[in-house]
Length: 99
Image 1 (tube, rainbow, N blue to C red):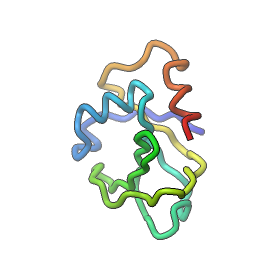
Image 2 (cartoon, rainbow, N blue to C red; image 1 turned 180 degrees about the horizontal axis):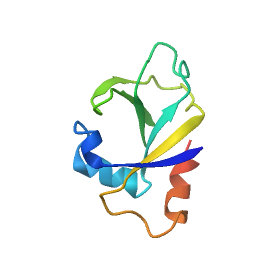
Image 3 (spheres, rainbow, N blue to C red; image 1 turned 60 degrees about the horizontal axis):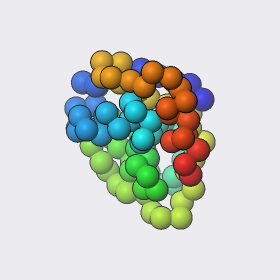
Image 4 (tube, rainbow, N blue to C red; image 1 turned 90 degrees about the vertical axis):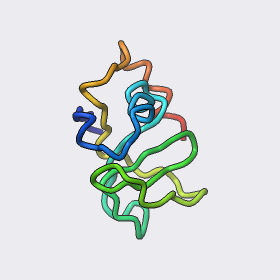
């Protein structure tokens, strides 16, 4: 898994509160291998608690992934470089294993 930092302006459709949740490790913003969610061709995925959303290239929600679909292998995990971040990776580890 690759950790990638991007500017928050890259995904203007994502609310700032959501971006803060991503940076604090409460939610995951990621890319997965093509085809991991069947018909969903998303630029990004957002895992919020037990719900996964497919997002387009600007961060707009395209679809909610059905319950019971297992989270795919995370290829790249994204954080926002221009927003506050946790002081250690241990703050994010609980979100990585909350499947």
